[in-house]
Amino acid sequence: MVRYILERLVYMLITLLLIATLTFFLMKLLPGTPLSAADKLSEEQQAIVLEKYGLNDPLPVQYFNYITGLFQGDLGLSFQFDNREVTTILLERMGPSMTLGAQSLILGTIIGVLLGLLAAIYHNGVVDYGSTFIAVIGKSIPSFVFAGILQFYLGVQWGLFPVALWEGWEYTILPTLALAIFPIAIAARYMRTEMLEVLGSDFITTARAKGVNKFGVVFKHGLRNALIPIITIIGPLAVSLMTGTLVIENIFSVPGIGEQFVKSINTNDYPIIMGTTLFFSFLFILIILIIDLLYGLIDPRIRLTEGD
Image 1 (spheres, rainbow, N blue to C red):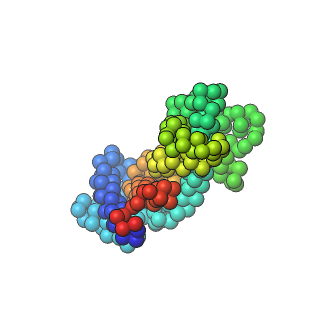
Image 2 (image 1 turned 30 degrees about the horizontal axis):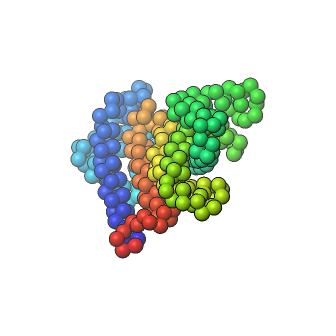
Image 3 (image 1 turned 90 degrees about the horizontal axis):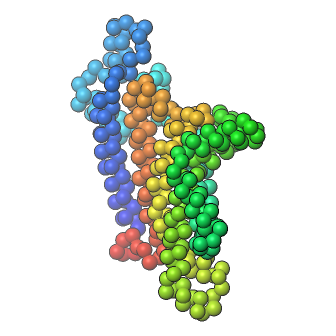
């Protein structure tokens, strides 16, 4: 197990290095410069700023300096916020983004699994059709559409929750609900399909023949086997929520990483763009590692290494 984790950590490091390299050179293809909005600066002043951030150096030198800084834990200085480190900016904005992502992922997965489970138990019934309808709607309509609907009805019309800003836990409710719609739909669809397949398996038939009640068949024998595909989709779901927050945070005026990422693109703030990309990539790779480890916990038949 330890050897497996160490090997995966090495692969993570190599992957992040490749992502950092690709992102660095792609940034140089963006139109304009970080000073494109600074029309009031003279040519001399612009040259001073470019020299300060090393943008006058040859491209290979800029790349070498950036990669060297990464190995030292330095993501560079923001162009948009004078003399502020990218690491500090990301840490300040990590809280809101992580809160929304975690809440929506947990809420969406739990509700989706329950809906899929009920749909499989009451197959071809009202609950089954309702769960399927919710899954189709959740996959077809973007989260920002739900965000607008939730803001209008739950925020403006009925006044149940704050419409925007970030001043307390109640401000997380609407954006969390908007983001949770998609994982609810995905989890419900996968859970229904897998549970129906499991309930039709031979070992379930044997359990029923031995007199195991319906509750025991579903939750003791069927649920564990049906959860494997759900664990598999957690990674893509987490990534979709990360990218989804880019829009949702702007709609709800949440001071998170997504909102800052959008602003950094508009201002060509290369260090923040690259730092945010690496942050998202690191989270995704880490989630994949955790999922692989969870496989062995949920189903003991799955082994990560030959020696296990």
